[in-house]
Image: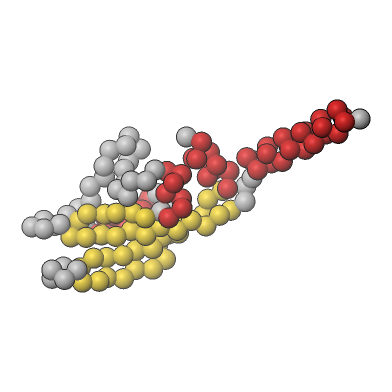
Length: 124
């Protein structure tokens, strides 16, 4: 009797794990993009804070392409267009002075992901 009960519990646990892996529940993820002008240049430095999602894709705040190379942007709009091509939607934006006469631009983006996609990224 104990063997049947144990087998049943393990089977239920296995099935619930499989259900979680194939979960198509939608999850909203947010990120903050900070663009800072470079000294004596038209280009900008772009840092991204993915929050908790960052642990799934790496802790580096710089943006890299599919080959792992650092992406350099010609300006703020170039960075915004890149995020749009990656499926992120702009939610809010504001600029703050950095004390040196320049501005630091903050942008908040949102992306809707499947829960199972997040599990797969964590496994990689």
